[in-house]
Length: 246
Image 1 (cartoon, rainbow, N blue to C red):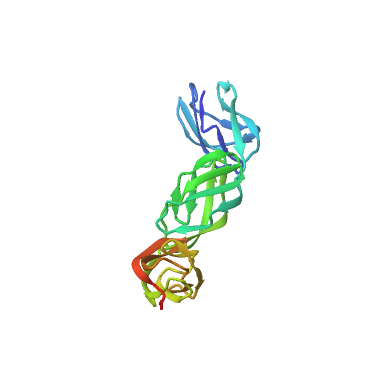
Image 2: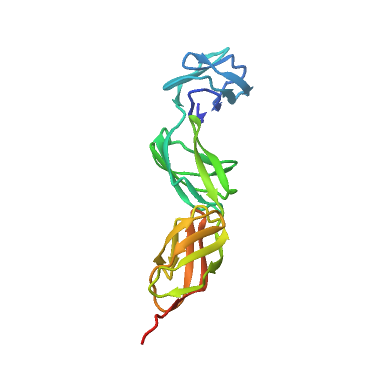
């Protein structure tokens, strides 16, 4: 007499199907000492909604002919989340996120707002998931397991940045020039480079970043801005000039 699934939430409410023989006219299905709600019954199967409970219990079916042999059912508590990392990423999705906690072994889905993804279970204490695409802004993160769903974390989506202009477009190879970078989605800027060399910078707003050009090699170079939403490179927009000589 198989039972499927053989585990569910301690809060109850799991739809369980029991198959066997001579099951017609079932008068009771018990999970331990508690009665389940019978929703469908045929001679070979019974569908019930599990009551609340805890631990491992025996499931039995009672008909006019007697009570069946027991089958084990395991109650699982709702998951508990302790940490999520990273807490932000591109709105295009595709970022690997690690969630730590307890009761995660049966995790079946992770929701980022209204969008869901299937996680990879590392252990009872950890899962990883690749973020689905989303809309710029913060969304709640919930993990669903056989024991239920747990909320409590937020994840912030950022649109990919653009870099439209660099003012001024030139400066001495010794560096030190104050440069204004203009673009979009620059609020979460974490890095600015000139020809791959890191520059000190200050985020003014979502459209403007002020940077100090580092020292470089004479010639035209690329400028790259990296944010939580990705990177944007403006090719050949800044020129390092050679100093005068006499």
